[in-house]
Image (cartoon, rainbow, N blue to C red):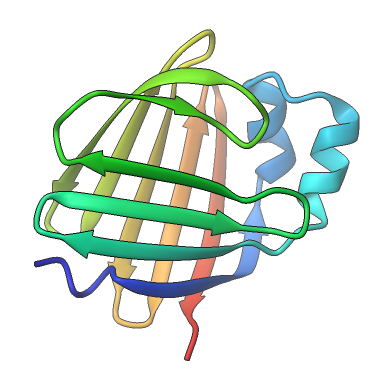
Length: 132
C-alpha cells in the first residue's frame, strides 16, 4: 500500500510552469489564469488502483487508474491523451502520449511531494506540502 502518497497536498512553490504549458500548447489566456492558481491534489490509493483529484478555483479534474494500464485522460486544458502510470519506489510516473507527449513525475519524501512536468525542452517543478 502506498500510504506515503495518500492524502491532501497543497502547492507551495512552482518554477517553469508557463514554459511547460507553452510546450504542450496551452494558449496565453489559459496560461495566465492557470499560473495564478494554487491547486490542491487529493491522492487516494487502494492496492494498484489510484485516484488523483486536482482541485482549483478554475476547474477540478480527476484521474482514476490501475498502475501499468493505459487509460484515456482529458487534461484540465482539454487535451486528450493516452496515459500510463507506473510506480517506482516512492515515485509515480505518469506518461502522457498525444499531440505533445509529456511525463509527469510525483516523488514523495515525508510531508513533501515534488511534481516534475516535462514536455519537449520544458521542465516544470511544483512543490506540494501535505495538508493537515
